[in-house]
Length: 54
Image (cartoon, rainbow, N blue to C red; front, side):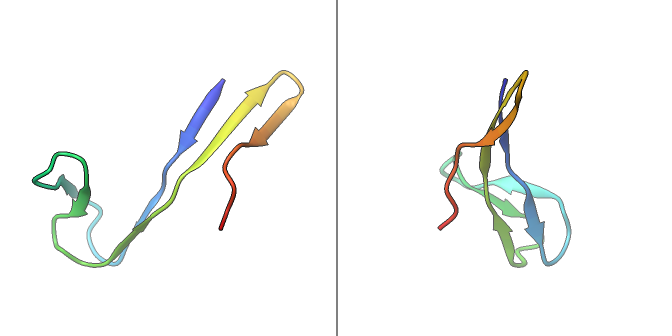
């Protein structure tokens, strides 16, 4: 199984809206936020993180 874990940390409220381009996401209250993603593969023998932190 492959999972994409995508937490978003916000300065204010958790509610979001899509940007006008339909791709981006921003907070409804317009406060600062940060988002990152890790892709993880889970096998019968354990797991492996496929993304590389920079």
